[in-house]
Amino acid sequence: MATKFDLLNAVNESLTRSGKLNKLKAEMRAEVMKVLDSSSSVTKPEIPKETYLACELVRDFLLWNGFQYTASTLVAETGIPKEPMRRDTLNAELGVIDGKNTSDM
Image 1 (cartoon, helix red, strand yellow):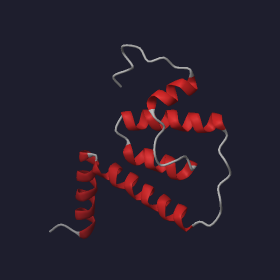
Image 2: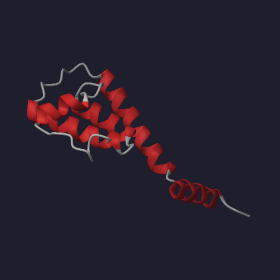
Image 3: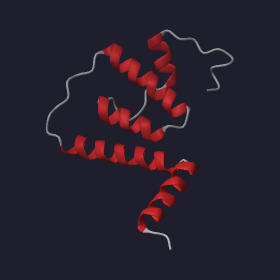
């Protein structure tokens, strides 16, 4: 007869194999950050422009790769606006020119 420990191990292994465990952990981290952010009465200092642009570039990369929960955690931790900067605006700010290979990303 399987013990409670055996059952927990089986569930853990199954969730790990399917990739669901990491997704659940990321969702939980993002939700905890939202709660902490909304309950904080401390105003965050203004982000320097270079840091803001770097965060937007990282967010663009995360979203392009489908890491929505990681991107939402980045937003909560850094204080950047919830709405991402438009790609053409980000390119202009960074002096990047989209070519044939990058414009479809």
